[in-house]
Image: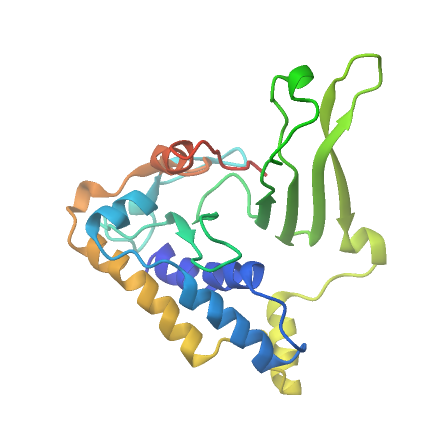
Length: 262
């Protein structure tokens, strides 16, 4: 069915809504899901072909090497149509049009046969209006970055600038990391184990509500329709073992950004 249906429409939009939601009044299933739905409703829809082309990139992996092992391209995989146009990679740019997140881009990507299996959120903080050390540093000060790794190793990391020892004003990027397994010495519960337990307890906090599902499909359907009308050779390819097609890099480069490489 493709990465857009399998991953972006449900998993990735849910992660986006969790990151961007306002604090709920109580830690109650309906209160949390109400705030998530508010975020989904505020996501800017893309309806025209130009908007879809400018904000969504798809790709399909070709033959390459993953972790030193040669793998075939998607169309050479067993039981796959040799002329398949199913996307194995999606990158997208979203905007949440509300007071807090106005004009802040949310970049999302997901794909198969990439260098590593990882699920994380990286929040890049905006530059301050005034830099005290701008004359000494030539304005080359890296942004602070908060990283939330969901899989495979649940952790939280903070990257910021610190002064390098010495007489010169020389700043270097440093990190502070917290890992659940290292801190608590216990194995974390697998995602589906947690959901099954919540189901047995009657806790619907992590489950999708009907209105959230409907909004998510409403957001992605114009993209699916646009892709269905494109030529079969319009889907870019990327070598297995890479981070996706070059067009995905351009999506960020045109805004002056680049993908974080885990």
